[in-house]
Image (cartoon, rainbow, N blue to C red; front, side, top):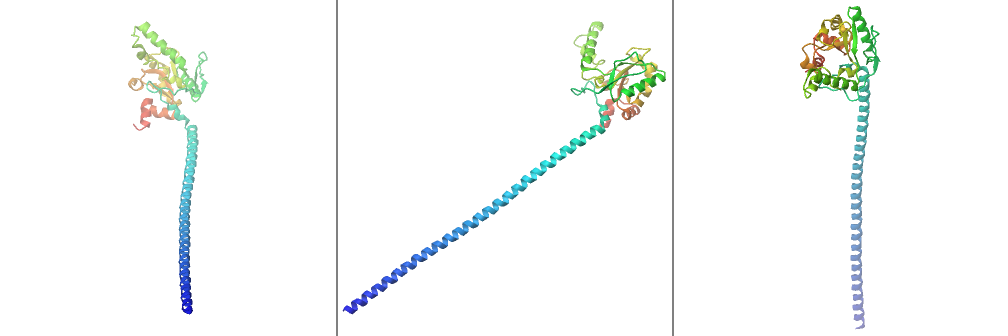
Length: 292
């Protein structure tokens, strides 16, 4: 009986040992599975982080490339502006004569603040002095007037460059004379005055490129000037010196100014020749150049 009891105890102990071993194996297996899952999670997280870093790196590189491209484009545009500015400046310096075609009339005012570089006007009649003109045409004026005298005329300059203030005075005086001497309605006088004396800011005399020339033997600003030896010679030859008769007969609807056979405008020899040969006004010539 004692032997059987001992066998039973040993069997129980063995079963307990097996149970403990199985339990430990299960726990170990659970621990191993947990460690494995943790490792796999870490690996997955690492892969995801690597992917995120790679994506972020690609985006950062793209952004860096975009910034570099924008900077390069900005630099290129800035350099292009500098080149255009230099080219424009050079073009202005090379083609400054194009400014000689500046249109100033009742519908086109002088640029604000425009003041030409002036030089004294001198000619054969030393009794007439004090006039100035744009430096680009001062010598041509002298040459033309001297040659006109040699050609039988007696040219005398009676007006050249005018300041804004002087032009205003002339305009105001014209209005006053129309009202007081001719009885013109004060409300109508300014518009009538503007047909013979340009409004301040719309006078070619303010350019320094225009001058009024009369015959010394006929010092009157009227249409009879056309028949004086001075005007006959100038109308035929002034273009050779770069001048045009600015307000020809029958063109008031184009120029806005009455016929003035004494008013000459410097445009340079090339343009003066073309205008003379075409028989047009400055307004028409400019319209032709613009292809209208």
